[in-house]
Length: 151
Image (cartoon, rainbow, N blue to C red; front, top):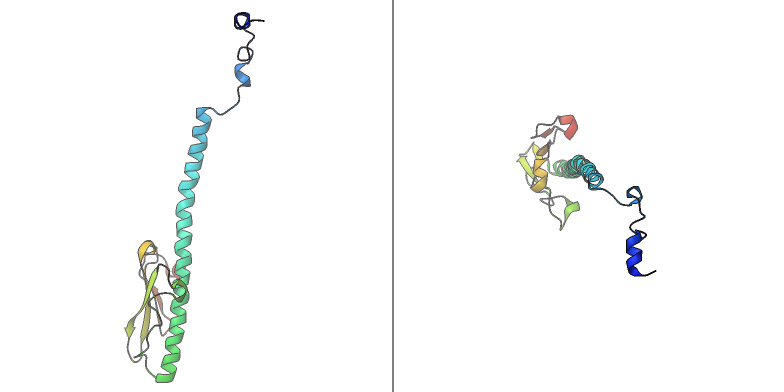
């Protein structure tokens, strides 16, 4: 069979294929998949970021309690909080890393000590804001979230 008769008879490989047998995705199917992925990402990314902020907040709380225990030991020995200095201005677990909270004594007198963790960088958008703990065990936050959600 020569080339001319092959094309004339309609027996070529593309001529016998039915439309239903074509494989692949249509543009509509592809757009539906893209839309579903976008919706899932719109839900997952903010949730993930909130969990990261929550874990960093837990770290700041642990640091505040640890440093307050050091302050109490200092008070037991010296009968005053005056002269107690925090070992670091940030978490000892973040040494060399980007600090998410700065730690400082916001009130320091002979009989009172209040340590505050001030949120910095992306952590500043945390719903709990800055966290504080006093020598009497009073725990506060500057954000609008409920105290039980933050501490």
